Amino acid sequence: MPSDPAAAISVPPELQSCDSHGEEQTQALGRRLAATLQPPALVILQGELGAGKTRLVKGLAEGLQVAHEADVTSPSYTLVHEFRSPQCTLHHVDLYRLEGSAQLATLGLEDVLPGGITPSSVVVVEWGARFPLFRGWPRWLVTLEITGEDTRHITVQWLPADVAQAERQ
Ligand SMILES: Nc1ncnc2c1ncn2[C@@H]1O[C@H](COP(=O)(O)OP(=O)(O)O)[C@@H](O)[C@H]1O
Ligand SMILES: [Mg+2]
Image 1 (cartoon, rainbow, N blue to C red):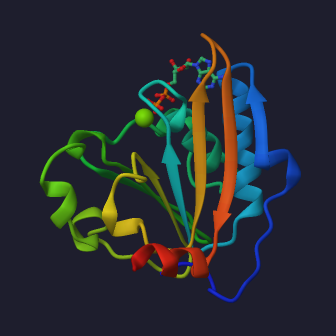
Image 2: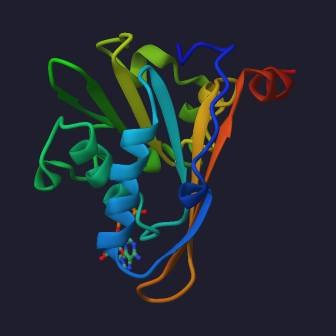
């Protein structure tokens, strides 16, 4: 799917590596990421339970103007929530429930994104890094690390098509 493989995308310095001192800051980072990415885009979130992945998606949804923060909740039991505006569709996927299951290896795109994706899609996947299906795609990789009760170290990388190609092999 994702963005034009030839497009060079550089991550703004303030997104590359930062320390969040509260959930509001993590949400604000989601809004900044929304302002940076161009649909179609794939965003993989990695970080343990409670790292702030869903909190970041709330900001992403606000920034993309597809939903209010209160509408964004963990889709753990339904795998995916979709939020639409005339400009953009945000597909919020959470694979936590499938973690460690044999289902992960065989899960197809149609299982995760039953309605398909469009040029205006932004697909954000909690627990996506361990999921083979997305491994070969150009993507944003956001890593959230718990560094204290209210603090998180967050890095954002853009992994372009050539990295994705290498991983596929
Ligand atoms: N700096 C921070 N950023 C994000 N969440 C934080 C932060 N500090 C504390 N928290 C708390 O951590 C929890 C993160 O929850 P959530 O976003 O659902 O995590 P995940 O989706 O990664 O499991 C929330 O209870 C939130 O209040
Ligand atoms: Mg979550």
